[in-house]
Image 1 (cartoon, rainbow, N blue to C red):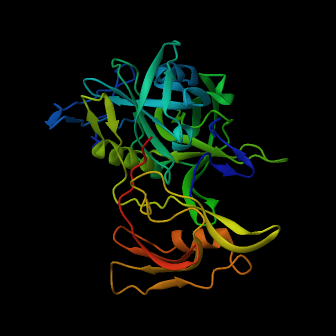
Image 2 (tube, rainbow, N blue to C red):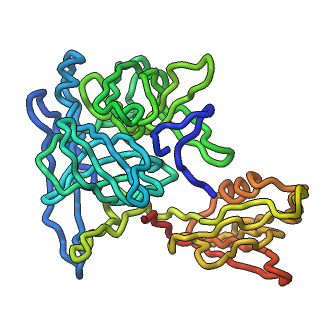
Length: 391
């Protein structure tokens, strides 16, 4: 289905894996560390609801060397583990804390599919991290580490105000083996629409700063040291250089705000009930061709949803064959849409995904699948429900 093991653009990926309410502050002086406000946690049952605020600061411009000195410790390396085996590495940015945890922003494709995480500080100290929440569509995730009094990045006030040609600094973990690497460049374009696949695009900051596999999740800072974006992708092909991209801080902060607002920490279990983006839905099946020998005769379900918050969880089965799909909107004034006569000869897998994800769906809408299961024809209704990424 719509998986983000990594962002693929031009045949290459970034990353070897492939906030609560934003409080506006007065600008801080160059030698004054950002002030992070905290609120007392609220106890509800066995959960601890956390509210994190962070600075939104325009720092004074200095030399590149001085700026790097100020921001360097806010960027961390991330190692991710699948089934207790090291699976890949990426980068992250410390952006805030409360009385117990520090929080790290990274890319969702850095953490996707993994169960364990470690962050490595610039001084090489290593800490176990936990997933607070993630959102594949925006490619943003948040980790927590039970350690405070660290160095935290300050967010730029508004990336809509970025000027073309503005100097930028990237700090990350290229190749997953070179943590703390610094590179510089400029803003090449703001709000560049990048097509991720045939049914999904993102508006990103384009930059010519050097970006390599493992930089994903690292910070893109302006010359004054304010965080303007989270590095997540690049174009790479023969004859192409200097086409890197970062998720603008405006987008990143909105997603982080949603994740932290909806996450809950289970004190008893010492685990997060992961946060999510309100209104986000997802279906968890993948499609495949069925048939005999080299003859593809139908399109069917190749794998099924495993996350209970997938809308189609426990609804479809492997080898169900698709005949037709109908979309009915909660808003009765919107016209019903249908994709009929689905066969391997007349329909592609991608066209089915595009039909679903380009339909402007929202929670409460219903996707109806006309399928054949074994020898029986069946109608499966799937109301779209809130999706929450979990591990």
